[in-house]
Image 1 (spheres, rainbow, N blue to C red):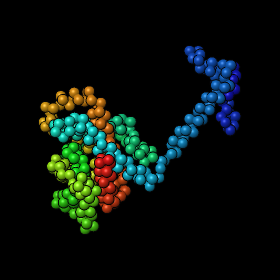
Image 2: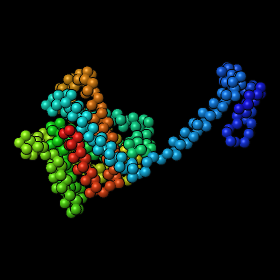
Image 3: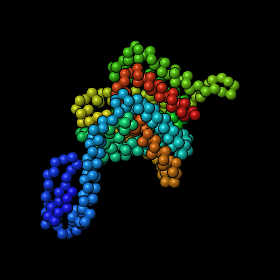
Image 4: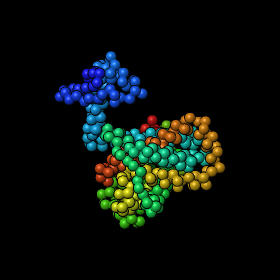
Length: 364
């Protein structure tokens, strides 16, 4: 950078000298600080600093653009790890949130379930606002671009069945895990059995013989892992009616959710307008939140002032409610990434392993 009375010449490193002349008269007098920076007594060092920052910024941006992230095989492994970890943390935060409002007998379980979907809806709105979905960062890959889907009114109406089933499955699961987390996981392990029955009867999609053979192994494995050693040295299973009833209800909703999801995404037009599974999951959670709101008001509306008072004053409830909602959203997204590239048997084994790991974590 050569200071002249009439010109400023910037010479990039290792580049031919091609003067770029700018006369002093072109710099407005109302910018004296700019003039002193480039034409003052310290012009040489200032310009070198400026050029160095520009070059470093250029290479930094180039490196960011060139970085494609971890290989898909590594990303898949990490998605599995964080899917499991997210599910474990969800169970922990969910239990803590329910305990903060008084447990399963407090009369606020539906409120907690609804507010968790409210957190999911807020998170989805943030993702659309920044137009980036950070979920793939868990696999050390660059975030996906994600804009708000351009759905029609008919698309939303067609999505309501799926949203209703998803909301029902979530709310019933919160009730089941609120009854007893360990026994609730055993009941939830029977989900593939109900899914096979519902698929056969209502959606004409019977499971293969090999899938049917896997079902008792899946349920039995989870039940075996749930056995607790008593004081007498024998092993027994803790039974909870709430976990059993709502766990089976959650399984029924989840089974119909799978069927409705397949039917909805079979429509190429809707699938294209959604623009990906991330948007579909986000819209499903938002609609589910809207569906649960009136149910929450009817069933637990009288307890709403009590809940709001607790929410204002109890930092534990605030933290665990928000974190349970975030964990629920993120681990479900990561599960979607993993199950897209694995077969049915692998998915069943992965779900079984997840439930066992969750139970061990919750029992610790």
